[in-house]
Image (cartoon, rainbow over all chains, first blue to last red; front, top):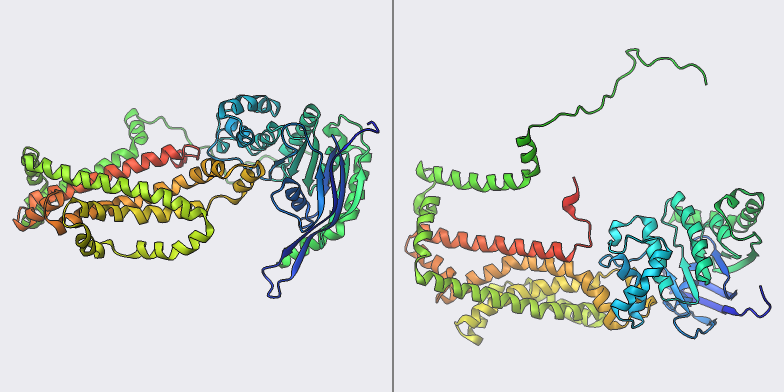
Length: 268
Length: 285
């Protein structure tokens, strides 16, 4: 790491309010309160917290899908292409498009002709390990393969920042572990900044340079933990004592919140 | 590990593998084509019972005729130039009315479904128009365009247009929210959102609308021809009925049924083509 390294993203005082339509008085729910976050170029940063802590909301604000109520976010400008691209939860592939057309979608949206976009999608299909499945429809893919296509679609637009919204949450435990290792390999090859949203502690620790821990009601950052584990990381690392210490440290930070969230879900 | 006892006492119930039987080739051929064979059998059986019934006097031939008589009537009809004139007129009404119905309803449905406020304003009228029995409009249509082929085409058109439009609007309104997020996330233009998301997502609904419309356009042809009493297969049925020529009447009715089946099949084919990105239901055991 050099001293000259620039920021990829900088958030200051981000606040997100929703009007609660359920209550008669029009109560305001604060999804995010006073979020400050700096992410260095090339870093892998996870946002971790129980459901309802606003981590996905923050990602959507960065992506421009929703607008914050207050505060601002700055994204480092890029010479060509886009600043950010989103890897969606539950794959979110177009069921009527083949793998290639799904991966090429972002390029086509950016005005690249379909034929050229399909050609440019090919290396990313190979990078995520979907060679030979180019002409399949999403229903013909397993959950893990769908997530690979979802990832390739975001990689293909060659953005500086990759926003990942719990991309592995719907996968079975073994596939999830495999995809985590794959993601690190791809991240290494693609040289991107990653902002990764998850509620899984081991996933966050394994992947990240920093784990930003969030709490709910209101959604806010409560800790920012640098993960000082050597890279490249292999899955065996999850069984080491230091890995366990990080997991314990983070669990203690969110345990109370998680229990409250579970109670509310049971009541509601 | 300690020594296990042997599971051979009467306290155990044994689960055996399914016995593999080699079936006769005819049985296997039957199993592969079971569905088709049984459908054909059902039709053949129906006509056979009808024939036997009318031969034995159990079915009144005067009203219902008999399959052999209908076949004779059909043979006489297809050698009659008047019949082909009727076919041409009915076919033309059906074709023009249906095609116009699709051409008008699909784009309108897409627009009305997409713009929320327009949808709020149009929806009550659309439901009203769809609920209104089209037959009730015949006198009005006759008043405006007369008793000619235009009137009949209009009735067929009215049978198709609202049905397909309602289905199209529904399709657009149920476009998957998360895919809309994907399109917006990649900064898709309005046009791109339409071509990549709204239209493919709505196609299955449009085709279902067309499926419902098949019955309505056929009914439109008959009702309009009954009313105008000029030309067409509907008129043939009507006149045959008035002349107590039940064989010719039944031939006309079966003709409409056949056209209906062909149209249903065509819509089904379109459905499978436009949804090849979906797992085929037939693949299920």
